[in-house]
Image 1 (tube, rainbow, N blue to C red):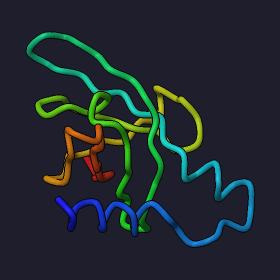
Image 2 (cartoon, rainbow, N blue to C red; image 1 turned 90 degrees about the horizontal axis):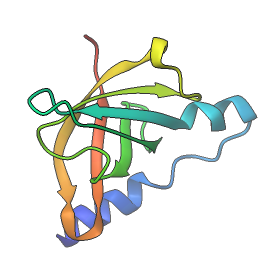
Image 3 (tube, helix red, strand yellow; image 1 turned 135 degrees about the vertical axis):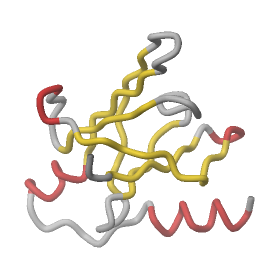
Image 4 (spheres, rainbow, N blue to C red; image 1 turned 90 degrees about the vertical axis):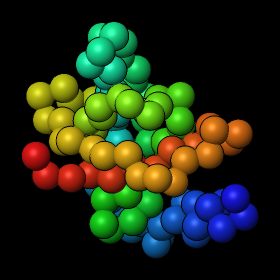
Length: 102
């Protein structure tokens, strides 16, 4: 657990952002849906690496849900597929997602 928290701490401090556009691109609108039940959850996250990793709350992106995200604004027409990583901490309500190509 200490390794997970250490990794999340390091990832949560991206390089200084110099422009408003860069700041907006670091914020992600997230929608996750459980195909079996139809339940949908929405929330936000923050890009924590250039590789497309996004830190969010586990209650937004629980295991078994399919997630999509849009950078900068909540745009349902411009959502990219996201995958869950094995790094999650229920005790701290933390999940780490990653943008991927469809």
